[in-house]
Image 1 (tube, each protein chain N blue to C red):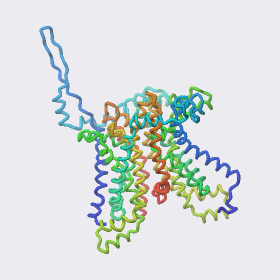
Image 2 (tube, rainbow over the protein chains, first blue to last red):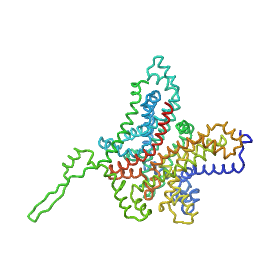
Image 3 (cartoon, each protein chain N blue to C red):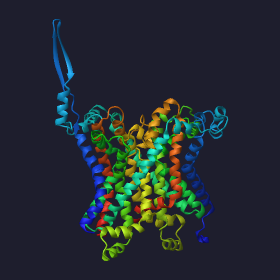
Image 4 (tube, one colour):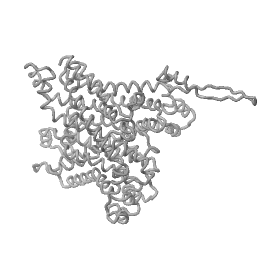
Length: 293
Length: 341
């Protein structure tokens, strides 16, 4: 409890509250608005005549007899077969997370347990790779992918995303493994374990908190990727984000904006749930690099 | 750890990065130095009793042979870097000689696609970053003062703009700011100008993109500063209070110095990330008013004709830009390492 000396004056308290309410609206209101509007017809979602239409859905009522309609969702998921893209995204995310964690854990563990100079240089190189915008690499991928006829397939996209994920995974897991005392696996090695046995029997059981946090960010990277999905995957293998970008060109002309709106809301929901359950890990992951520095 | 076991542990991740990051970078640099072979044209003269006609045709065999012999294409050196689509030395020189005032000079320069994109990219990067740091800082301080029960909820909603996929976030915002959307309507109502439209006004488009940038990245700054606030030394705060420091002075002389390293951290990360701005331009359909370096690359790569050489050249220029922004981070990491060793 705050003591009397720390109590804030009334004016300050009021302005702080107003600011917080404002920030809350700025951060959250667009999502509520779009979610609510996705159950309306286009005339209500973009209501030039009367903005309250967007809330009460008068045009939706005229068209469908109710003020809510799933027409946009039906159009996106059934007519435009958005479920294929959802499936592609799920497959991509699953394999990217599993693969990049597997090879990333091994690599980061090695980095944290080696004291030679090359460790520093490897980390520096990883940092440079992390800074590289993914889109700049795409023109390097295309010629060989066409030549070996691997362009457009989901596994190709997955492998590329795994590689792009590595620098970040290495940095994050490296700082996590640094926090696990070296004595643990040293003593296992003294007892006659090989390095790999020490890793498997001693480190693996205690590494899960760090791995889960890193996995979350790998998932987000794969889920949010746009450059790879749009440029490297063929039309029927597109992920959700790439498909929504492709929607934009076609839907605006055909007047099916609500398909795109429903698709956007559908793709946002999993992220909502993710933050809800893993808020603590996300916060700790974001700050892991920062607080040390 | 022995070199041998280090090698085997590190091999898979090293291979992934070598093949899919290092090799493509080399390939991009090479591509930017070569242009594709032109098709070999042969002229044949057909003579008939009524006169002679010349026909031109592509000699498929000869073309294939040349492409086979030099798969990279014709060496062009820095030619592509200097062309109109990139650094445009000639055009810049011409503009420098022919224009009278600075305004006219810059007007000419901004007509060149590369400089147009560069000017937006730099403006976006250097306007967004300080703004989002300030917003994130104020949000962190206010949320930190909250009651525990609301705190979790506030953090949850504050995280959303950052976690949501950039393309989706920018679309959600765009549909509201669009002239048909609720905010767009409100703005044109407030300005009492019904014709005010995002799609028709370059300054408005730039402002909305920057608003998106601040909205989507302020949560990162918020989270980092919030974590930093948990470690502010309470003793120092209390002794400052006993010495008669006001609330403002305590913030100014205790809290801000404590958070200063974090400000540098956030600034460096955000400068690099904002420099690659791409998705909001697509979400806002802003290409008529604002383009970025990443957008040029995407535009060259997409479509029917994949202009690999042009895209590769812009990629190299972008990588150089990222390198410049990255150098302070590298210096910092180097100092940390030296300090530890």
